[in-house]
Length: 242
Image (cartoon, rainbow, N blue to C red):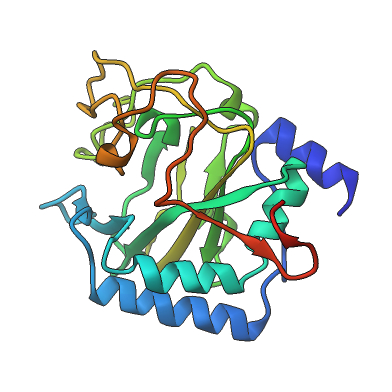
């Protein structure tokens, strides 16, 4: 891996890697994505519900856990993040599913994932896979370096016309690009710690965040982010990480 790619990821918080997955691997991801949409879990919700711009979102579906862990273990994404971070260990956190259809899906409001999830440390990453060829005007947008703080309060995702509700966002659909299907796989490495969310958050999430609250209930601020529910990955050419 080029040192410039590691540097860009460390400083900017995001990199674009083209052609990383094979056509067969992308096909496997799309099959799993379609299954996850049809078999959504208890965390699924309609972003901007009851508006013309509503979209389907799901996270950490327990029904899909075994199926998606097996898929992720067969993909080179864990090895990619190990190289990007320089981490001996990589764990799979969970998936995120986005479906915007019909040409009316709004921009996702600007936000930071750490406003909803109790994450701290340098070794966190999302592998964002869009199955369509996405025009620039419809792309995910990133504020470079925003992963380094400050951390802002989170939006409620209720009002698509209020961009000031408390950083990434964008990814709308429109008449020219009416449908988007996006699968996100989340990972963490050695430098990942637990950071409780503030109790005065307007978005209303508990200190353990919006996912795996029971599993994380025993962690204190600064503890390593670890629990047996998160699968440690193996690189075929390197053996288990480590």
